[in-house]
Image (cartoon, rainbow, N blue to C red; front, side, top):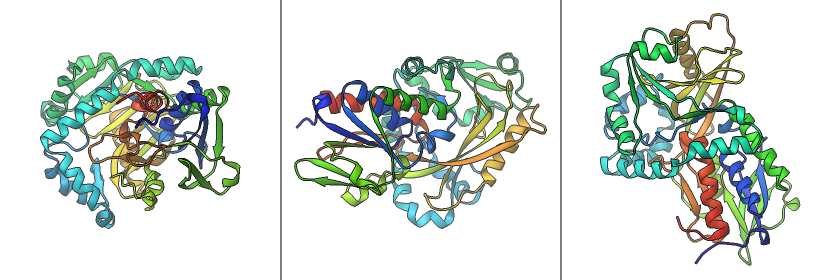
Length: 410
């Protein structure tokens, strides 16, 4: 049975004001629904705050790729490995890890890539249009992404990922050292081979982007409510109660969209709704005020580090740490990012830095869950976007709105 509703006739709560939830709230409100956007923090201050700003439709290769098993020793024992699992968290991570390993089987990885490619389709044009619509066109930088390797052997290690991109229609231009320097003169001599995806983009201040989305949502008459959501509880008559410290201020809702990132399980598990979600903790270091060192997103592919020209400086982000939501950050990982960037680019002597850690909400197969929750009328999921929440936020919003308001399939 369709869950579609007639726009303004029903109340909708969107839980989570990161880039995904904020885009969903704006899209629903623009189509006439009565929407309340709820988050415990200011909009955009979670994972959306610290990401690398990449709009990357060619990122179709899931994190779990064939050959993953051989990387497990590094995951467990090399603290600076791009993919690291804290040993003390291993018992809790085992159910997710078992599914992660299954997702790395060749046929499973190929299915994930196809689903990701379909979700990414049109992301560049949609974000360019959204940035103009909400009054921040200067944040959208469409100058491509440059992936760098020290030599042919390093590139060969990523061959499967590049073949997967190509199979979905993404063609990269191969560059030698002269070609790299022509695009980015500041790149150090270590990098001699480049792969350039010319039609990719960067959001130069992800926090300000989310804030602009929420401001547009409010301008359209949407309601923003700051509170920690403790539970979502089904009520009679197919309605939902959102339990918070100020619950009496919230009405009953006909529909609830859960877009609470890595914390979504705390709302779904009590309902008996199992989503195999894990935090993949990411770190960044930002060089304050450093401008002009790169003019586009540059990926130090051998070290899995994204270097991005932000409004307020140069940001280097990356790494995956599986350690759950409660263990303290290990800022040695951010320090490793800083060391790599200082080794790669001149001009950073004496530049001060800030460091950050955030929680990416990841599914074992890297494919987010988007749509109605089976068996729970009025409950919708937009969770598990992992490294690609920014890329897929606008498309996710359109998919949710199409199905919730119009009853569209897919």
